[in-house]
Every structure is written in structure tokens, then in C-alpha cells.
Image 1: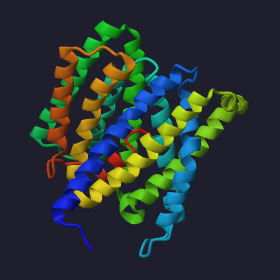
Image 2 (image 1 turned 90 degrees about the vertical axis):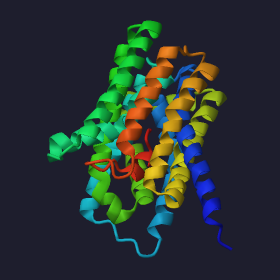
Image 3 (image 1 turned 45 degrees about the vertical axis):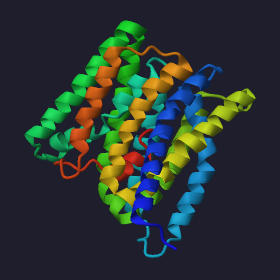
Image 4 (image 1 turned 30 degrees about the vertical axis):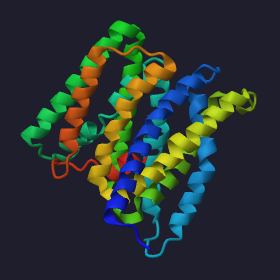
Length: 318
């Protein structure tokens, strides 16, 4: 028995909203992990290792779907590049930046991904941009600047380094989005996410083995492992499946717009769970950023596709 269109839409909205909040909550869990003696590389390594079996199973399931084109040698090469850019480098820089900035500022900077994709299209592919898009860009960056200056006043100068790292993380992920468009059409979004995460896990493992003794990961507290497992399952794997479910029921445009819930939720979750400062200026800046990105990601509003399906699939790793 098929569900009604209204029921499918409600389910899609619930899945999209849950995915956005869970993706954002990754930053909260990372902050808690830092309190147990872990750093950015430890957090990333545990996240990747714990989520790897789930993404392997997802990749195998997607590979067995009828009608999907086989992945060629060239596609595998591109998957390696995308996995390193989108899920290893971007995630490492993001977790590193979280050592210095509050979660609300981190999520706002990452939320600029569509604007970076647009700018990459302008400078790398000579795409034309409408005036309203430039206005949306200006609004978005003005809002981030407002929140940044307020956090600099409240948190101190370490916000400079942390913001720069998160900005580089957002740029790295924007490169992933800009390069993934055609591949997404050929192999499918879930299959791309699954195999790119496997590549990212391998890159993280190599990095860890080069600079750390892996025995360190076997000497952590039970709480540290529990937080890492929650990060892998609830803030990495489940949001991917939730967001793809929302895209299937609502379309990529509507599902992408639900991502605005993430930065808003972190403003309040950061204050509640981590005791981070929250001021009227931060709230105003957050509203300005959300308005600018909303203008840019409306259906048919972009000269350059923002790859909403892929972007929401792992805005972290959001």
C-alpha cells in the first residue's frame, strides 16, 4: 500500500530536518571528545573507522541495484580525488578549526558551501552570474563577517585561526561539489558517498600511521569511544540516508533548503550543551547568512548548480 503524497511530504520534511540537525551535531560531539584528550586527527580517525563498515555495506547494496552503470577506471580515479578533498581534507580542517571556534560560527562558515561553488564556477568555468546572485553572496558574507567580529570580541584572537581552518574546509568541500556533478549522474549519489568515504578512511589511516602510534586509539576511555561511535552513526551515516530519503520525497531544492535548520540549531545547542556565548549580534548575523544562502539556493536561482543532492549528503564531513 503506497503512502499518500501528503504523508510522503511530511516524512520527507521530517527526514530532511533530522538530517540537518544530526549533521550539525557532529560539531557538538567533537567538542565533547576534545574534553577527553582527543584532538582533530583522533576524532577524524575514530569517526572514519567506526562508520566504514556502514558505508561499505551501503556501497555493496548500491552496486547491486539493477540498471546502474559500472564504475570505470576514470571514475575510480575521480572518486579517489573527491574522497581526499571532500571527506578527508575538509573534515580534518573542520575538526581542527573546531578546536578554536564555537560550533555556531563553524556551521555558519560551512554553510557558505553553495557560495563557494558559485565562485568556483565563475573563476574556473567562466560561468555568468546574475545580479541577484551577487547580492545573495554579499548578504551571506556580510552575515558571517558580523558573527565573526562578535565571536572575536567574545572568544578572543584564537577565533582567527579557527575561522581560517574552517574556511579552508568549506573551500575543500566546495571543490568536491564542483567536481562531482557529472559523476553523480553516472553512478548515483549514495554510491559516490559510500566509496568516497572509503577512500577518505584510507587517507585518514595513512595520515595517522605516518604521524601517530595507532596503539593510542586503543587506550581511550569508554566515554571517548561512545562519543566516537555516536559521531559515526548518528552524525555521519544516518544523516546521509535521511537526507537522501528527503531528496527522494521532496526534490533536491526543498531538501537543500531544510539545511538552514542546522546552523540555527547549533546556535542554541552550543549554548545549552557547551555553555557557548550567544548574543543578539550573533543571532542577527546568523539570520543574515541564512537569508543570503536561501536566496542563492532557491530552485532556478543559480547560474552554477550547487549540487544539493551531494552537498546535503555529507556537508561535513561535514
